[in-house]
Image 1: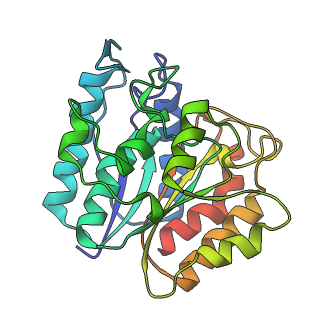
Image 2 (image 1 turned 120 degrees about the vertical axis):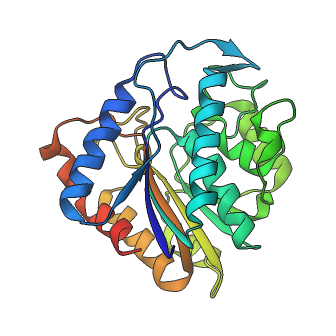
Image 3 (image 1 turned 180 degrees about the vertical axis):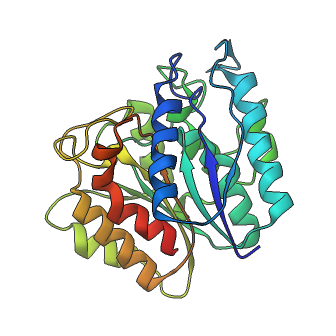
Length: 271
């Protein structure tokens, strides 16, 4: 399969309430109105009992869902992935799969948060604050054992502005690339784009400033404009071989409000 459109409305990684499930369903509905492509859905239970296990709330449910995503990808074997979610946790099997196909995969992580806590360091114990740590460092005695990791030098963290102390320490220790939303942003982004290299683009909608789009799971002030986010994605796609892209963490259910995301979703469709 050349390209798969994947929908994984996982919500258990972010809270004990399922507003993320309903928001992702609305996002999918609007996306489907823009594209006639078949969307493969990983079935997620809209109701679950969220228990703390292995320092992760909802661990058993999340582990099962990540394995479903893994099985889907291995069965369809797509060369490219266009994904709608759900919580950020779905990225663990997705990046693992793509890194198995493309040895030097570069990950552009557009997110207000680092998502770099380990289960032990996480203050909330919610998995959506951990996926990038699982992607870059093997997490023993968890489902992280079965997924491939990528080097920290292959990660480009963009727009992060709400980091926990352990996340900042991990960024410093690993020399992870960080691109801030300051006056030097465009030059810095260009410097991190490698010609003729495969790339994956993760977009947590909380990277956008809440004044433009506020109904995300964890909004943080002083974010990007939608126009700058779309322009950034277009720049990466133009310069690199983008083999996957995701849009996640939406809780807005009003389609008329979701429509402001159309330029971003159109880039996902064209991928």
